[in-house]
View 1: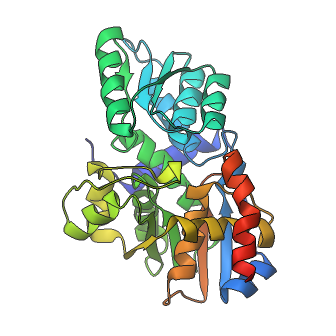
View 2 (view 1 turned 135 degrees about the vertical axis):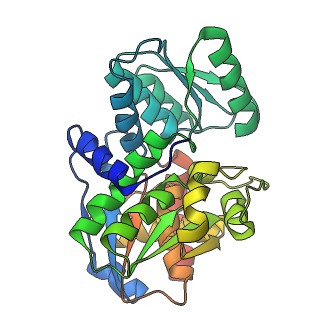
Length: 322
């Protein structure tokens, strides 16, 4: 794997900007009052696939154009990475196959099919889905795209923070949801170059703490993955993002799935924003952090909420109010 650099982020920024407009980033008075600090909300939920991961797909597609021998892409994903790969394949004019574990949100898999990709549902977890994806790659001559260890994807994800810190260079902290850790790694790369005084804080579900354990132990770790939040459902650390996070991430917080659900309800009621579970994790981390600074940002990484998540919003709002 090639090392990740800020120069690579800048190059990815040019690629992404040619296909996707910058996403909004602003504050909401009611949310600021509720949290007690000024909060900038970065709205990746308005991307064409409903999540920030499309940036990685767009950047990957640029590396595929003109490449000979690429018969198609195959990957394993519960949804948002899958949509980004479908988007990438469509841009590159090639085939895409996505292997999703059983129990993946149907709304996300329908969106993958809508972008023209083939969906294979296999196995109870991402472990079995990834094994099947590797088998299909070998059998059909497809290129396997690792959701966490592909440099073009990490650099594409980093462009979220390139936009954010160019617009708000005086931010004191950025809270970033962590599944594989690609977004948090990208945030660190950009922060080091543009806003060295800004803290980058990772936030993960306590029901899927593999990346957290990898960061704390300074070596790749596995952990049970029982979270309801599909975008955070990883059971093992990823080498490429951890190579950045291990020495550059300022802090890493674990929050419960109920904390995340409450944060999603707060975003809906105080910031007019529908966030899926992973997309609300950053705000959950901010709320759980007693050391939160006076001016910070949270990234709503996705808005592909399932029907169950949408139905749960009123319940979480009632609990928060009480």
